[in-house]
Image (cartoon, rainbow, N blue to C red; front, top):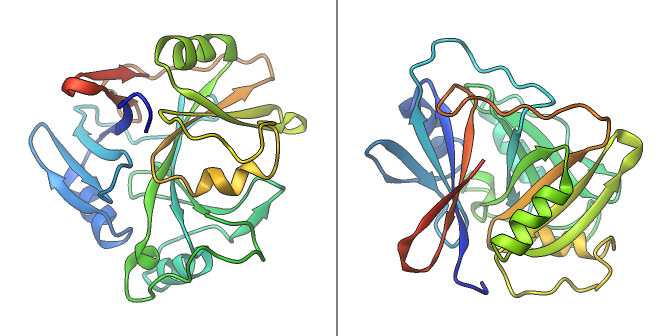
Length: 251
């Protein structure tokens, strides 16, 4: 893992932490790990956990394309199996698709409207890392693989992530014709298989990392990204864990 630091958690400010925790455990196969000021659920291992904190705001969460926080992604070995299970449980989920040369993926939302992306370790049609266990939610090998934030200034994000925090820059995925590019960072000493960080070869490798990666969607449209007020419905905070138990907040 490199420096000993890690993506430790994602704090979501929600209206009903208990109901959401039950959803994440029953439907997505997470485990309840702690309760207190927040309910913590996760998959174990070294990936980040979800911290569900109650907000006093009453209005429903409505996601906007210029919000700072966008989504988190769950990485799995067999997307088709996972979608089949979700549909059988009455969960609305988009049709899996090979999105360009990025990933084989689909999207869903939790009961309060937070976007969840499901990403297969490998591209559509390529050999899977595992067929998964049909008796276990999402095939039994899921982990929280990505947390995605939006930005209108990548220079600021590079300075914070690489220069200040010591994260490694792992991949750039250009979608300029759609008005954005994607950048990926993590606390790791691992090197992508291809030293060209634009390489398609690095993408399935990225989806197979056991730790949680920080993704930035860099908006190229000139529109300003908006940060929701702290502790408000739909706000999110990334928790960075450092040696000695120190926790740092990234919003």
